Length: 346
Image (cartoon, rainbow, N blue to C red; front, side):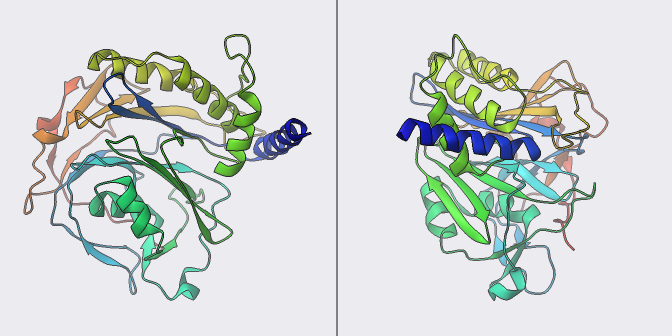
């Protein structure tokens, strides 16, 4: 009876997801040397004009939505990827905390004005975490107090700015943050190694429980929908060997994220939120190295965080990717001083 109930929950979630199938996958891979690597794909209906930025420690920041915005000074430097030049969509700070924001249609941040709390743009949410916390546990403790209310205006392309946030650190700790029905829901623990999109994380876990009894070498769900990608990544993550060689570990992480990527140009008019993989990233926490793989380029490049100038007083810098340059190898020297972008605002 329990198995039938799980199956019913899974079927319900899959039917729900068929209406709002979305994009992006995130995972945490453990190496044979107790290291951890975070991978993610950015699946979107168009190229969101992502650039890379380096932001130093000691930056004066605010929530970006005018009066009532929360204010802070960055404790940690970071390398980040932007979205439409109005949001930090992911990154890693110099303490080794990795943050990834993925689309979630079900997100409901509540009424920010009624909260009575300081305000923050959803575009600044990820950056706030990278600026302020060194570990997942520290972030969970602080954010569970809900120090701000999130304002989520429409993105420049007209899409809703709704997302959920995943964190990971050098210890392998992981946490998922979702706002459902105006309430913050946190899943905290090393077991939360995979995140995709709709339905909510709780429902994704139910779907995956149903599939755990299936031999993945014989059969796995194969569509590009969010629940199917969640199941395939969860199985593959546990099936691949833990590599001791750092180069092989990174290669394994890339093989995992490529296995759930969506080919360029693939679209379904009846499911407009299904989208191609625009880029992939790999964050090697132990090495403090951020890899970037554009679907429009034949080459992979990376940034060694220790080679960036993230000291207090240093200038923010940018690696412009909008022209789809062909870059390879370590590229920290190619960052040039630039003004930080303004966070998404009404």
